[in-house]
Length: 160
Image 1 (cartoon, one colour):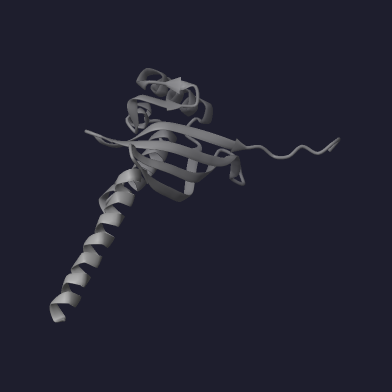
Image 2 (tube, one colour):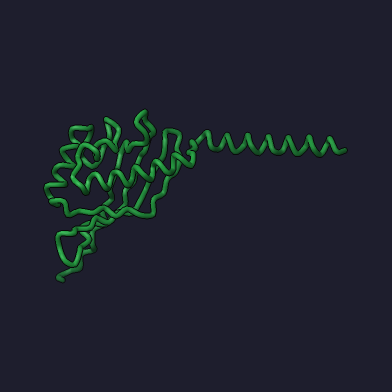
């Protein structure tokens, strides 16, 4: 009887493990290191763009990466240079509530965005929105394949 229960327990564990692996395999899985590296990618993105390092910002994307209308490294670098010229070093991205979901091809990411303008006093919020991301692991580490910024616009009121 003891062997029956032991065999039953082993079969249950094996079945549960197989079921969990099948579920993870269909949608992908991430390690704890992957989550940390992706969090660092979000930070590198914001710091590079806000500090005017167009090359480092473009490095947070795959070579064929997409952000807004910019596609590919050259256009990404040009976008970052234009952003820096526009804000003259006074922009600060504030990203929070980062969600990372494993996918078969890498991960989907999402976070809230506040873009703060430090050239005015009091400091002002220039933009709020939500980033929606496709993230893939490359030989150089995790990179954005595509970032879409859904910008929230204030509601207009009639005549005010």
